[in-house]
Length: 453
Image (tube, rainbow, N blue to C red; front, top):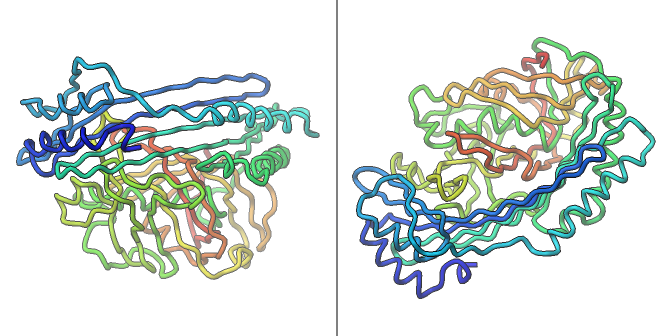
């Protein structure tokens, strides 16, 4: 990819210009092509969006300055790097845009076909009132990052996702259900017909949820299923361990490292290369290689997620988490794939002994006070736990509390680690939506606040 966006000869020439602005200066070329197909019942929509641009970030005694252009070319980088006044304003060179990186033709053809196949399967099922809600997306992002020392880091990121949902017309609350199937290739996305299996599960679950009861309220045991419910983890500690948040006054997960913040069963990791079948990136948006960053190690605070600016300011090591929404934004310390490591318990141990509680199958949205750790998340699929058994489906509920309290209340961690890849959209300082992944095995929280949506 680096040869497509930036040739070796162009890189060598541009590096000399970047060095003139300081040794920490970098240049970015970025282009993207995104296709979205939506199905609501029998209505089908499709749209496609392409974007490209370049940016130069100059680091000096006056701080970091971010300049950008809508042109994706070596000429645009040369113009930006040579700009005399380092101010964070857009600038436009006179050269024509150099755009590359279209989605492969087989994906453009296959995506509507896969979405339609899913809808047809669900519409011809036994439940006549079921309405498919399907969003299929394909995104190809290509970047090349040039440093002042002449090194080039390039990445080619292909993300494919089938978001398969359904509702029962006329049922209380719509009786919704959702599953997400993701992959970094068509073979991984639809291999072994796992998208069809997910559609069948969605249809069955939606039908069952048409008989859902009102959610419980109050403090109770909460069991979180593997995969999607790790969105709670994203809220309760993920943002708080991004270095700019962690090192702010009154932060919940402030230094020093090594202090106890969670139960001994809890190990939390961030790794952009996970899961293997749906990695997010190989180098971050500042050209830094990815790494496996342990945030909590068996209950103790072990590390933070950093970008270049945060690492320079705080002294914490670079972790490959400098991410940006697009070329018009500076990089920030952001989560990638954040997950709770597997434990040694069997999944049935999580519900055993729970007299009254909530089993959470799906969480796809939430909010957190990043400095203080208070959070609220919306539960989209859950069930009663009564005397150790999962029983009646429950209508939409919320979970609330503080992050550290939840982490300390985890008393069962199972061995069935799973991931919600590409399924969560994250917001930070108005850079939204940035794709992240989450993961966890089945876990039990002894006590957590449950409320009505």
